[in-house]
Image 1 (cartoon, rainbow, N blue to C red):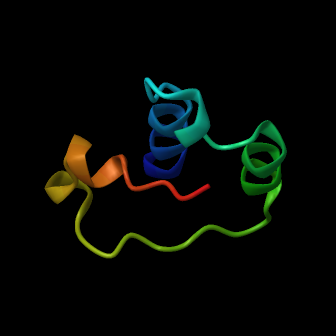
Image 2 (cartoon, rainbow, N blue to C red):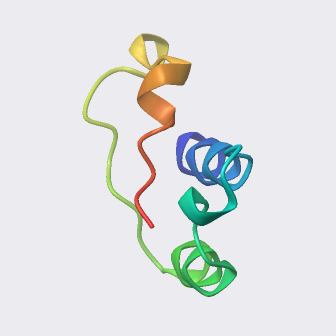
Length: 54
């Protein structure tokens, strides 16, 4: 859920050049494993979710 939200928020950035390319989004979504949460789910904020890298 956290990863999906991070990607979704990155795709809605106001400046098109700061949005991830669809190829990288597809690759990330199709990856077999994702990083574990670095903190408890309840401690994750929207500002922390906006850190998706292109």
